[in-house]
Length: 235
Length: 42
Image (cartoon, rainbow over all chains, first blue to last red; front, side):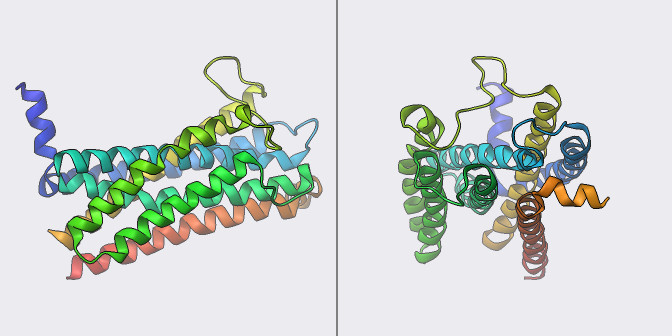
C-alpha cells in the first residue's frame, strides 16, 4: 500500500474529516459568492440581448447550471451510496445524505426557472414532455431518498435502504440527458456539448459557465457543512 | 434603472425565476447555520 492510499483512508474517518471539511467549505463558500457576483454581472450587463427571445433568455444563467447540478449531484450521491454499501463506511453514507437536499433544491430550481422560461417562449408553464417529466422524476427520487431515510429508525438500515434507492434511481440521469434526442420534445436540444462548438454567443456562454462554477462551489460548501452537522449528531 | 428592471417586458419571468432561486438558496444557508448551532450546543 502506498503512502497516498493510506492518507485517503485516514480522511475516510469522520473525526479526521471534520476539520478538513470545515476549511474546504469556507473556501468554496467564498468562491461561490465571488463567482456568483461575477456571473450575474456578466449575465445581466455584459451578455447581449438575445435576437429571438429578448431579455427572457437571461433565465439561462441559472436554469442550465441548476439543471446540470441536479443531475451531477444525483450521480455523486449514488456514487457515495454505492461506496457506503460496498465498504460499509459511515462517512460515505453521510455524504450521500448530505447531498440529497441540495440536489433536490437544484432540481426544483431547474424546474421552476424552466417553467418561468417556458411560459413566455413556448406559451405554457408546463408540458408533459420527456425532458420535463424525467426531471420531475428526479425531484421525486431525491424526495424519496430523504423520506425513506427519515422513515427508518435504525440508522444503518436507513442508510442501506436509501443507498439502494439512490443506486437504482441513477438510471434516470442518462434518460434526462438524452431525452431531447430520444424523443420528440418541446424542450430544445443541448446548446453546449463536448462534441461540437456551442451554439450561443461567447459572452452568454462565459456567463453561464461562471454561474455553473458558482453553483458547484456552493454545492460543495453546503454539502460539507451538512456533513459536519451529521458527524456532530452521530459521532 | 427602470428599463433594467422591466427586462424588456419579461420582468415577471426573469425576476420570478431569479427571485425564487436565490430565496431558496438563502433559506438553505439559513437552515444550515441554524442546524450547525444546534448541533454544536448538544
